[in-house]
Image 1 (tube, rainbow, N blue to C red):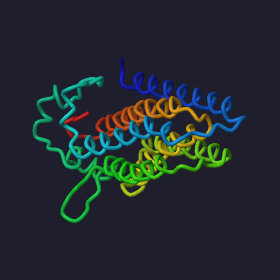
Image 2: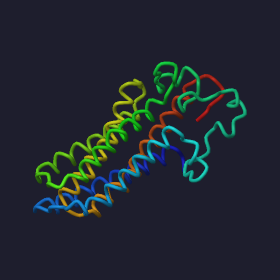
Image 3: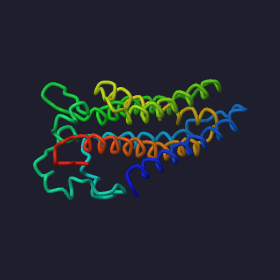
Length: 234
C-alpha cells in the first residue's frame, strides 16, 4: 500500500468512527442518563492509562518501536546516504525540518510530540477530577463537549497536512487534540450514562492519533521529496 493510500485509509476510518459516535450520541441524548462514580471508573482508568502511555511514547518513542510497526519501512532504513543524518527532536537534523522542532533552553523537542505530552498532562488531572465528581453535568453540556472534541481532532488533522508549519501552533493544536479526547469521553458519558461509550471513545482516540501520525509522515515524505539533498530520511 502506498503512503497516500494508507493516509486515505486512515482518514476514512477516522471519519467513520466520528460518524458512529455522533449516531450513538444522537440516539442517547434524547433522555437524561445519570452516571455514578463507579460507572466512570473503567473509562476514566482507561483514559488515564492512555495519557500515561502517550507521555511515555512521546518522551521515549523507541521503547515500543520494535514491538509493533504497521508502517512501511522508511527510506532511512534502506538508503545508505541517510546514515550521515542524525535526529534532533524526532526529526532529521537538516534545515528542511527546522520548523518541525521547538527549542526550550538548550534542549530541542519535536513540536508535535511536546504538544501531545502537554495535552495529556493537562487532560490526566481533568479526568481524575471528573471521575471523582459525584454530581452529573447538564445534558446540554455533552453536545458542546462532543462538538468541541471533534473540532479539536479535525483541526489537528488539517494542521498536520499544512505545508508551512509553525512550531508553536503545531504544539498548541496537538495539545488541544488530547484535551479534545477528554471532552469526547466526558461528553459521551454524560450523554449515554454508559461506561462502554466512554471506552469506545478511548479506543477511537488511538485510531485518531494514528491517523494524525500517518498524516505527519505523509507530510514528512513530501518535505524530503522537495529537498535536493540525497539522504531522504522518509
